[in-house]
Image (cartoon, rainbow, N blue to C red; front, side, top):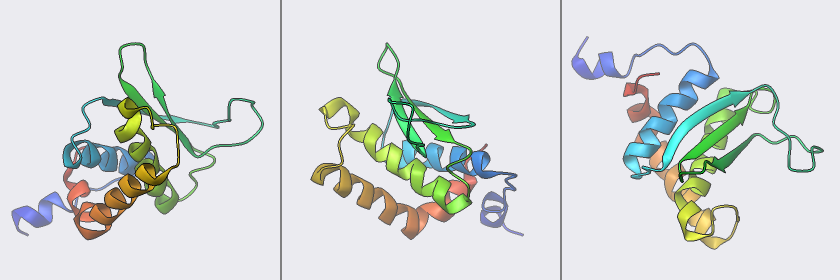
Length: 130
């Protein structure tokens, strides 16, 4: 087994560990210094407390960003990864004033992140610690 095989064979135990790897890869790949935390909660509701969300981005008082994921809504590995990348696209645009929107700039950023993940990130992210 070569060095590359060891890097890409890190064993993960659950969706949260895989999400952690993907977030760490995204932070490196897309230079996202303000993204500081990834949290996992049982259920995540919208501001009205009515609709269940898969994930969200929140800003702390010092400008640090946190991605929060719902255990219940992110029920599969693929949905968890899609949600992490979706929320990271919001985080990447946060300081532009467009971080909460789903406009053209958001979808371009999300598309670039998904393309990078599908091209090399699905393997590269496995090298990151959980």
